[in-house]
Length: 319
Image 1: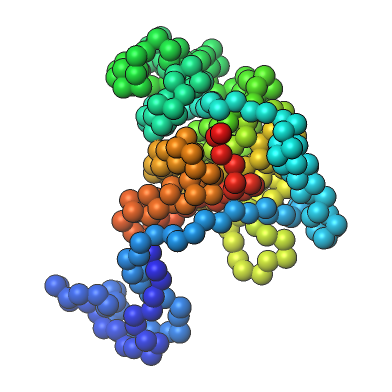
Image 2: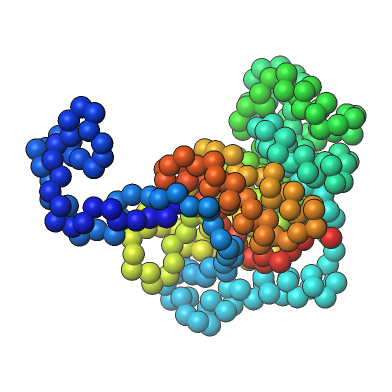
């Protein structure tokens, strides 16, 4: 959407009457419009380009120097150099932990490209309602290879009770990460800027894992810039942000994507996977995902919950 100003400053708006079209005011007889930047949004065709970021910044203000920021990025660039020089290798598969089956449905391009054996999906509830509430015994890989197609598995799993919350154990997740390096690792849990299944410190200390991380939780990309004067309502600096820590830490990840705001809508996984497993690269896949989110947002409030940010290397692919 394109922001625009349709009402000139100084315009006097009167109280709205039944059937009157916008602009008008409610609750007062009249209102003089002040100086402002925009008051309406015009339709657009969505984003025209992708962007990727390497944010820097420390909670400890004494570290917010150019030398400190360079040091903050050092591990990431070393990992990237090792990857492009062929010193580290990754599988092509997907690791997905979610109590929402629709994420696996949006992963069909992965199933189509690689088959079910390359998807580690956690999990489904075959024990009954409430069996895995706050119970990590439910953190068990579903045997997707038993099913002839994604549709067959989704039809079966869709009839089962919900997995509930609290079974997604950080220690199990981190143990799984240590064992392998996949192409994608995707986790979907209640989150905040400093926690998403694991804390930002655990994310920084994590080893192996994958090449690209997808975090569906609310606010995982929320952080403030050092020395920035505009007001933002998040206090977390990049060194404590969980999404940034995934990329800048000891893990194998070179990129991570997530939402700065509360997320309540489809994250757009399908176009991202279609592009990535169709021979494309992450930056363009990110753009196509943003365009879908833009098309399915009926208003600015909805678009806010659809925004994504890409941290790290935008030129990764699945080849």
